[in-house]
Length: 56
Image (cartoon, rainbow, N blue to C red; front, side, top):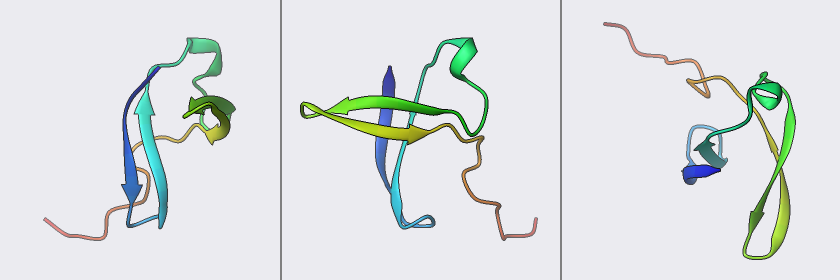
């Protein structure tokens, strides 16, 4: 179940967050989501989606 999504400017691609069954939650797993009647392949990724580049 997708809980949120949008465009990720750091990746220059769409990103989404949601809930998956534990068996499908490993990073790199391909899953599918339905968007406006079309099935889209999604790749499970760990957060953060890209490494941060700032220093504290």
